[in-house]
Length: 105
Image (cartoon, rainbow, N blue to C red; front, side):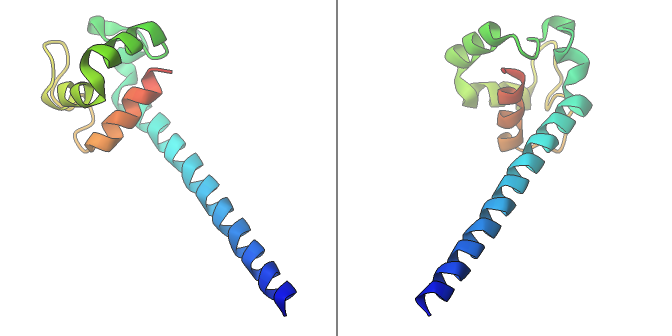
């Protein structure tokens, strides 16, 4: 009887782990897709002085200066070279933070 319960618990844990990994992979894919649709036009090339994706030094400096909350706020409000909300009018603050993290790597 105890063995059956243990097997059921292990099976449930394995299922939950698979779901969590799948959700995490989906979230990464969503961030990459949103980046391509909304950010890549400027952040791939550095167009209009946008910090380039993958320029870890520049992104680290920005994170240190403004903090994540400040970067998200700047994205929401816009800057002289970037419209408010960038090109993602439906993004939440959480999504902007995920995009900033994605670009900073």
